[in-house]
Length: 251
Ligand code: PGA
Image (cartoon, rainbow, N blue to C red; front, side, top):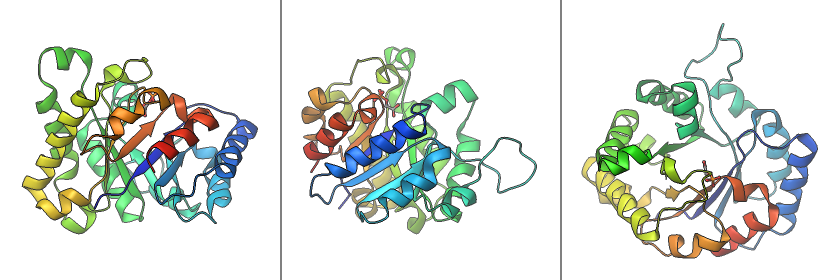
């Protein structure tokens, strides 16, 4: 069975004090749940956030990106090994903002996935189509390509560690959400791709998250869908009350 997950992707938000306040508030009001809760703060706060969450077995900490290089003369980069060394557990890879603003493509993303797994970080691999691609009815092809090229070289053991997030680019930060039916259609498609490649047991064990303007007001319909295991939350993860509410709704 796939795990239920609520992950907060803070992006480039919060100074140090605000960041630690947010984590404290969420932990204080954390529902009694087995749902996996993930904080993805900026790199700078990973170590401290990981320390704050250490006593909560279902709370994990993720970086928002990692280098596709192991180490060396790559000014400004942060390696998967460094992230693991400050006790983070996971790393988001291939977020559409990384693809769009930093030119990251599947070849590099597959390397990032490899680096994450090499240092025991669980990758949260993001896929999703743009509005133009959806209008041209290319979304299934786009998503298949994003998944196959960055993940299907993995063996079964490694594939089992991957979390996938479907985030339609047109719904991220726009206030526009995919309808539960639109999202379920893509999630079922992703599950089918995984089944064809790795078999049903592994496909069923992989968590597939929805992301894109997901908030308490619209999460119920999304979380009710069979193949939606949880959410990768941007804006609503910056407000403790909303994030806690989403955890409750996914519990
Ligand atoms: P959003 O972001 O919830 O603000 O739309 C989601 C994401 O980009 O992970």
